[in-house]
Image 1: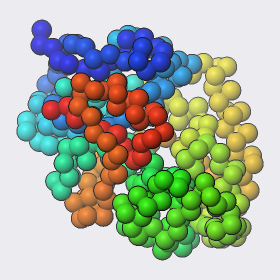
Image 2 (image 1 turned 180 degrees about the horizontal axis):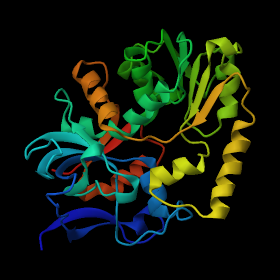
Image 3 (image 1 turned 45 degrees about the horizontal axis):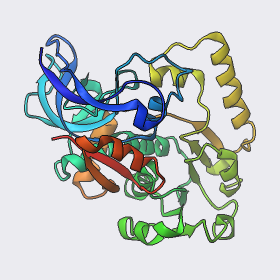
Length: 346
C-alpha cells in the first residue's frame, strides 16, 4: 500500500496534543469518478482547522480519528477521473469539502468541482492562500445589489478582509474602501494594499469618529457582531445597503451544506433561534445575511483571472515547511499573524 506524510488530528484538545505529523495511506482514485488526485505543493491554514482540532465543532459532527486537516491547497494533478477536464501535470488550486478535509498532506483527493486551474502569475504558495478567503470575500460582495460608493471592510489584514478590499474596487466597482487595523499593522496594510482610501487605527481611534454614520453602502462583518456595524450603513432603503457576516450564526440549511451533516431537531431549532436573534437587531432597510463560502469552479476561475491580471494578490505573513506544521498552526493562532499562513509541502 502506497503511503504519504500528512498532518492529522489524532484526538481533540490543545493544538500540541491534537495535531501530529504521521504516515497514512495515500488516497486512491477511482478513474470512473469525478474526483482528482492532487500532489499538494502548498496548503494554507484557516481558523476553522484549529477549531475542529480542538473539538469546538463536535456539536455538529463526530470526528473519526485520525482525521485529515486543512481545506485550501494548490498542486499538480497526479491522476484525474474521466470527464473531469484535468490531466496529469495540470497545475490547480482549490478547497476541499469540509466533510472531507485533508489538504495538509502530500496528496489530496477531492471533487473536480472544488478545483480550478492555478493562476499562472502566482506561485503555488501564493495560490494556496486564495481559495477559501477569496471565495468568501467574492461571494459576500456578490450579495450586494445596491449603491457602490463606499465599502467598509473591518480587519483589512485578515485573510478575508485583505481579499475583500482588493475585490471591492478591482472587480465589484466600489469607488472607495474603508478598513480598520491595529496600530502595528497600519503601515503594513498601506504597503500591501495601497489603494485603500481610509485606514483607521482602532487601537487609537473609535472608527465612528472617522467613518460617518449612514455613509456606507456595504459592510463585511468579520467578528460575528453585525449589529455593531449597522449604524454605518445608509438609511435609505432605495440604495439597498448590505451587511454580510462571515462569522455570525448561520441558518441550519447552510450549516448542513457547509459541513455535510444532518442536524437533529434540537440543534436545528437552536440555530434557527440564534440566527433570528442576531438578525432581529439589524434595521429593516439593510439587506442582512450571514454566510459560509461555497467554493465553485466558476468563482475560483474568476479569482485566478483577476490574479493573472495583477488585480488580486494574497497577503501572506509566513510560510512553514510541513515538518513545522504544528508551529505554523500555533503561529496562526497566536494573534501575531496577518493574512494567511501557508505550509509548503513539496
